[in-house]
Image 1: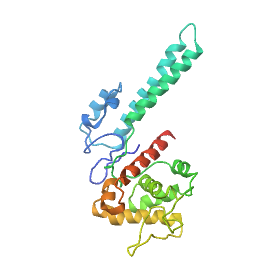
Image 2: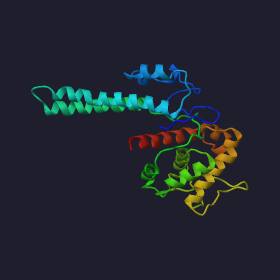
Image 3: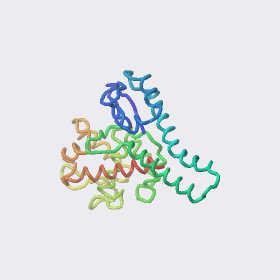
Image 4: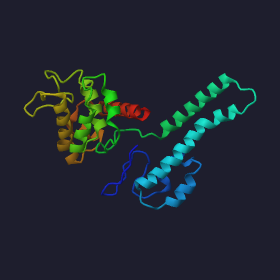
Length: 250
């Protein structure tokens, strides 16, 4: 769950919901505010500029309180005189489900307006795990390299490759490696020499044709001419969320 304040002081909306770079009450959802220690940490930081240290403070109190929700019901059962093993197992399962539900409620959801220039800052291994049963196996680092070079979110590019070619299983017609459906000006599909080259072409195209022209969301990319299918951006967003959910579980 990344967070950063950029040079223009705009907050990356990944975890908190801040519209600016100042800590205020409307930056948090109800789950975050329900943390037992929220008020004390908030009072100390209200009005300050967001930075990684403040973000970490809120992260830690929420994590601690969510974990207490997971363990307390089971700990309470263990002090009973007549311990019912099945009862403890059921309580453990219910506590785990409640915990996962709370976590799911605060995880970021990708939507049609998500900024595609936000960088994925997680581990490459989980990307490779996600791609391991596809022709793009082992190319997680390449998505990160292209993200770094062109400023396009790696997961967004992965999602496009899923929608356009099922992660390389069905490259553009007449090509072997075109995973993104990119075309030539004179007509026909581009014919990169490798999947690696195709990922680079995708990043370059998104940067030159869309980002430099202010089109920085999935829907703006679609409307800007990337796809004629009106449901394209919804499909990309759905897969982007699938990838994010996989990452958060691993």
